[in-house]
Structure formats: structure tokens, C-alpha cells
Image (spheres, helix red, strand yellow):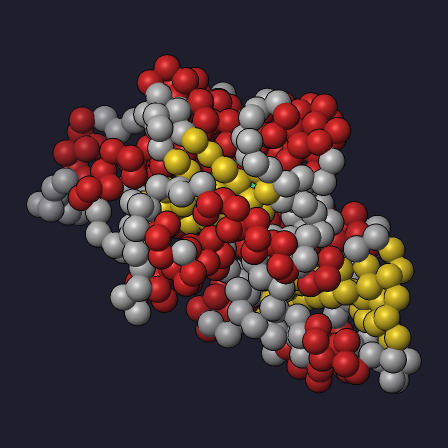
Length: 418
Ligand code: ADE
């Protein structure tokens, strides 16, 4: 078996942590038990490019239990948990190509290693696997009949490919399932981003000004959790509807140029480029903390910070302190890469349970239905979304009501008014 990992000796620690996460992923486990019996993915080659975490390990186990032949690489150079890579290889015989801190070339070599296994289904988080496949591996592309995409940024890239007419096969936008983005993006990113900032810095959030760039589901989550810990939250938005929502949720909203002067902590989650730039760094308070929790490391203009800084020092694990000509110091966390995975462990298992239940069921759906799907970005089937919510509620011990016949008839009628 081909693989590339940091240290295979880390496997025992990785296995313990994978099983710890598994205890918190009952929906995925239920699917795994069924896959074990029904083998719906028998012989299907699946190439995955995901954050290599304990939660991802349990998804890989599930696909393998279903009969899939899986290989995995990282979707970010800093998010790999090396003990998990080791355990997937040694304990679960799944080929993984991922080393934390890998450079740009190794990151892409690892993507190519997954493509060398000739996948028929791609499973991506951010669309680097899909874009590499389309731009440089046409012979592999011919055999691929379907894919899934985990995150908002990836879905946006795929929609651009679809619009340009270059998308080579149908890809299910797992991110757009309600049981994914309403929970993972909001509660997962909310908690894990705060977790990453605190693990990197050990600052007190209470009483500090936390500037959150972007009020999508991820930004909402971070704002909610930082506020819950006593921070004064300021939102940056370009969309008037989202900005208005932030105002009515009780947050201050202002342009980045104003927020730059008063923020103690900045975190970007916009999915866009160069949110914090030279003119903002120069206005910041001495000691300001700057982080990104968006998918790519493009939201902070670190190139310009490198250029204008008179000094750069790694002052703590995952904290680079830049000194500006004015003498002010700006602390950048996790090299501007997603801080929840660079400095913490990503979203907790119990929320990834739903995201990865979606991934597993989307894969099964593709195997069954790919012949009738167009080369487009596909919506997650609604019945799967509802099935996952129902299962999750049940595993959490919650029961809910069902409509009575009278209520069902009423909802279908138009003639009953006041
Ligand atoms: N994305 C965010 N958190 C994650 C996790 N724990 N595992 C895989 N992907 C993630």
C-alpha cells in the first residue's frame, strides 16, 4: 500500500482519538453498520481530499465498510493530525497522503497520489482535488462519475466551473444540506474558531473587541460564541441583508477601516480575498490579534505584512508577531490558515456526525443514481437531509410530534380562512 505520513509510530494514539470521536458520531455509526451489511459501495474507488482529523477517519472507515476503496489526502497543509494519518494506514489499511505543515509542492503531490488511484468518485473540501483533476489529469477525469463537496468555498468554485461549462461530472453540494451548514458552519465553526484563538493565545475574551469579518453561517457562529464569552462583537459585512441581521442580533456593524482602529481580535470568515490589508494593519492597536477561519489563507494580506514589517518573530506556537515601522506589533495566528484546524482540532465530532452522514449518504446516492444526473452542482436530496435530522434527534434522546390528519388536510387546503 502506498502512503505518506509523518510517523507511523503515532498510530496507537491516533486510534484512541479516532474511537473517542466515534463515540460522538452515532448517526455515522448507524450508517456504517448498515453499509457493513449491505455493501452499497462495493468496488467503487473513492478519492478524498479532506481535513485529516479523527472525524474524517470515521468517515473513511464508513466508506470502507460499505465496500469502497478509499484513498485520502489533506485539504489544507496545516490541518492534518499526524496520529490520525498513522492510524488510518496502520490500523484501518486506508492509504493516506498527508503530513502536517507540508509545503505547497508536497500538498499537490499528495493530491496527485490520490488521483493516481483512479477514483470514480471524488470527495472534496474546498475543490482543490477537483480543480487539479480538471486542469491536469484528463485521463483520470474520464472515469469519474460523481463527486461531493463539503464546504461553501468549494461549492462556489464548482458553480463557477459549471457556469463556464467545464464541470466534468455531477457533484453533490453537501455543504448546502440543512443538516450540514446550519450546524457545522454555525455551531462547529463558532466553537472551534474560538477554541483555536484561545489555544493559540490564551487571551481573555470577556471585555475585548472582537471583529468578525463576514456574517454568513460561519461568521454568525463565531459572533454568537464570542459574544457568549463576554466579547464586544463588531461585524464587517458587504451584504445589506446580512448586515441588518447582525444589527438586529445585537452586534455593531461598521466598515473595516473603522473597526481596524478598535479591534483587539480580528477573525475573517468571508470566503473572499484581502479583507485585512496594509491600511488596516497600520491603523490597528499595538498587540492586535489577527486570525482567519475562512477556507483559504487569502483573507489576510500577509504578503504585504511581510513586506512592511521591520521584524517577525514566532512568539508562541501558531503566533507570528510582526513589528511595523511605527513600532506597533500585529500578532498573526496560524499563518492565516483556518485557525480552528491549525490551532485546535476542527469542529467537534458530534457536529461532524451530521456533515459526514451527509457525505456517506451522498456517496451512496451517487452510486445508485449517477446515470440520471447532469454534469452540474447537485442539491442534496431533501429526504436524506430529513433522515439525518431524524436520526440525530433520536440519538440525542429527543422525540417530536407528527402532524395529525386534520393538520395535514388543513395545510393542503386553501378554502379555510378566518
Ligand atoms: N472541518 C472542520 N472541522 C473538521 C473536522 N473536525 N474534521 C474534518 N473536517 C472539518
